[in-house]
Image (cartoon, rainbow, N blue to C red; front, side):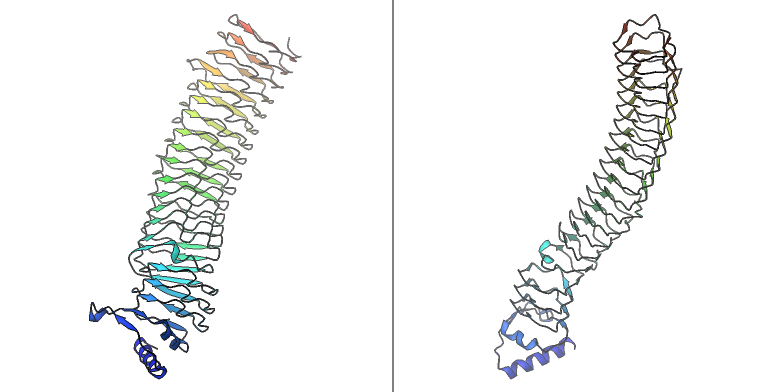
Length: 489
């Protein structure tokens, strides 16, 4: 039934019912007359109409106007409608779909109360902003389609819509606002528009079933934007991307491979933390900073390719990546931060390029499959416990061309139990407390001329140490320095 037939029959019924028509027209333009409001009594005539209701150009839909219409399945609300009153479509138990424009300024409480079958909304072309109240009553929505023209969607509009499964966003939308789809735990698919540039904080956080394709113009992925999106698998980050914010992909346990585009200057803190199935990471040239815990506890990470533009590897960046097989630290990195590769239990190969100056505390502790370590001449400080519990290291060598003074911290090689011999660099002045403690297979140590201090417990429990030639330069020998070195001659 078309609109003319609808109104013809509608007025016929009104005449038969001797109802008074209380209608007012705006009268601004004869071609665009808008029926501002209709007395609620007149809606009684709609009972017998078809399952699809295509409303005329109203400004307001009254309280309880279409309540309890059991046969109503679809409503088309024109762009002239500004207000939907309380209970307007309440108890329409068969209502499944609404088509509307975002010219609405208010949907009052309970407008769609008990519309339990309402599962699809289509927002047609219209300029303006989508506000949170527009969908707040529609708890059973499964699908939302935005046609082009919607330019802005406010934060949290779809937050915690547990039934939501599919959303098609308009192609001209440039920003996905913060918490827009937060905690939509059953959301499976979102079609992102070609114009999208910014994904804000927690936009898709806890969308456990989500899979998406990233548009080619995205510039920024916000803090926790995809946190705990466990079904994300094949995300290709566009070359335009500049910002990967804190925890943006943390706990995305479905991710397998990640290539970081070179426009990203910093991979921020926890960005890919706890991505349990991430296997391969490549960081392209121009990226400079790998943030705190950026890839920590990625249990299945096998390979990491670091570009030669990386300048900082921050604290715990790859902590507990237990299957990481090897890494090359480029010469552009001056400091390998504390715990950055600690507990990488399966790391077998480590290349530290000349240019690195400081290896901070616990940087490689408990890398239990490391066998060979070579310290380049640029290194000035190996901090406390830097290589402690590297139980399979049998070769630890220093570049003989090194000229500047070097410091080796307390317990730096504590319990490197496979180490059999070591020649200390010529520019070492102090062997700190516990540096070689519990190196139970250490047989030979070449102490350098210029060494002045051997601190407490330095070689304690090196039970196979056979011979030490003490340089004349040594001025101080700490307590228990060679305790339990029972093979020492």
